[in-house]
Amino acid sequence: MAAMAALQSSMTSLSMTSNSFFGQRLSFPSVSPISVKSPENTCLIVAKLKPWERKECKPNSLPILHKMHVKLGDTVKVISGDDKGKVGEVTKIFRHNSTVVVKEINLKTKHVKSREEGEPGQIIKIEAPIHSSNVMLYSKEQNVASRVGHKVLDNGKRVRYLIKTGEVIDSAEQWKTLKEEQNKKTEVAAAS
Image (cartoon, rainbow, N blue to C red; front, side, top):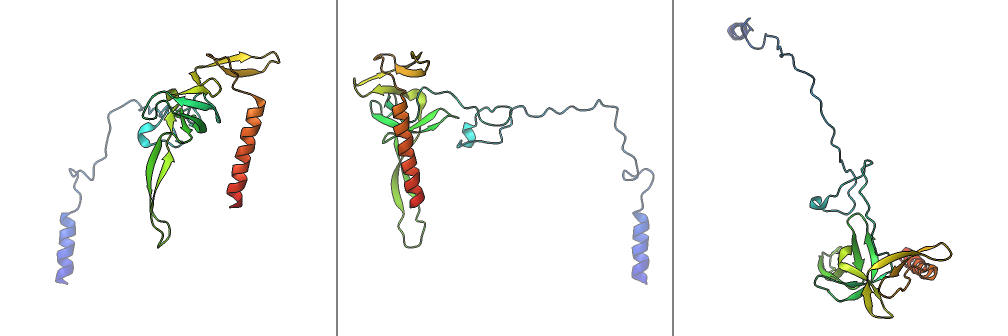
């Protein structure tokens, strides 16, 4: 009983008085409503970019895709960097940051961990992307690198051509053979 009496007396001493903070209403001075701006460039989809490489986005949050002077399957010559002067074929294009992967050029060393127990790790070479401004279209026939131009043929078709040589790059036959090679690769990958 003595414990109960002590507890009650301590509770009454803690009761809120009129000058206590807890018993008072909070009143704010009249302030105009705060307008919060929504972020204008919110990019929800970041396609193969490092956090420090994030690019500007369209209103639908998709990355802006840049037009490039090279296409898949083009023969190009590297004009700057460690591999300057080397010639290769474009195998992959990343339009969101204007980079291309060229076959057997800009090889980087990658250390791969073993996936299964008992399997050793590996050190492999992979082709890293190069910025498209560091490559120029190349003519195998005349062994010269050139800028690209656009012209309309007699049949109304718009094609790309090399300015130095006048050689037409885009042709229907090239695209057919390129697509057939890609289909074969996907079939082989699906079969294995």
